[in-house]
Image (cartoon, rainbow, N blue to C red; front, side, top):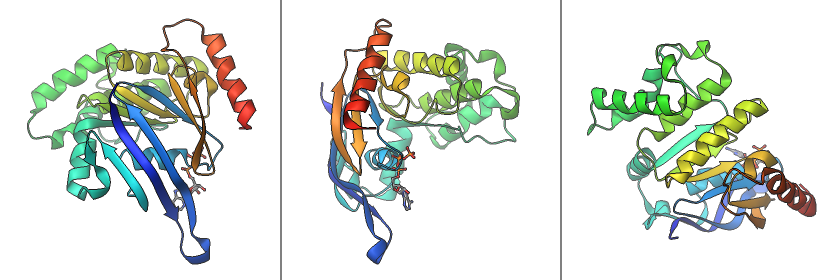
Length: 252
Ligand SMILES: Nc1ncnc2c1ncn2[C@@H]1O[C@H](COP(=O)(O)OP(=O)(O)OP(=O)(O)O)[C@@H](O)[C@H]1O
């Protein structure tokens, strides 16, 4: 499968003078089209920073990031924002949604900037997505009137509105109980089955075990990888065991 994103010797530094520190220390990473990957590693190892670099959300201090043959490091802020809006979806631990809008409007709002689409067609798409993830009946609810799992489903709908090539998830199940987390992972698996690449940052071996490749980070570098067969709903215990064995082996 062709590579969708290629990060080559990425350096990302924070701080000034003696305080300056390479949070990404020349890290190279790729994500293939339609691939389902996870990034694991100790707190502060640079997982989220890598995600923000590969998605063009943050600029880098060295190296290159190429998305679908476009060099993100050379792209203007407008070009980057277009690429992110049309080709990428983002899901975070706590979906940031507006309190004065209902769930449906929160899902639609970011896509309203895409002038090729009108409100009616966006509403149709949002309702189809909500139905698919099991929150069709919640469209009129305020964001304070739904559970954490339901809100995260809405966050996933919002990320899917523009039919992205890839979804980036930073601890998307981190705030959920294990049942809701597994349900969210079922949704991610389905989305991936349909061809959307997914990159998840996670501390949870049960989440990482659902993916097909895990990159392990330590001190701003990828220090190991684990390849798993594509998840087919079986063998979960064995998959989790191999992830935890690898975590133990590299000491995270
Ligand atoms: N904007 C910033 N300014 C200064 N330092 C930062 C900034 N963003 C991240 N860092 C530092 O970079 C390091 C890596 O952060 P990052 O969030 O990528 O780690 P992580 O592996 O995702 O950690 P966690 O698992 O705790 O979320 C940390 O030491 C963090 O404090």
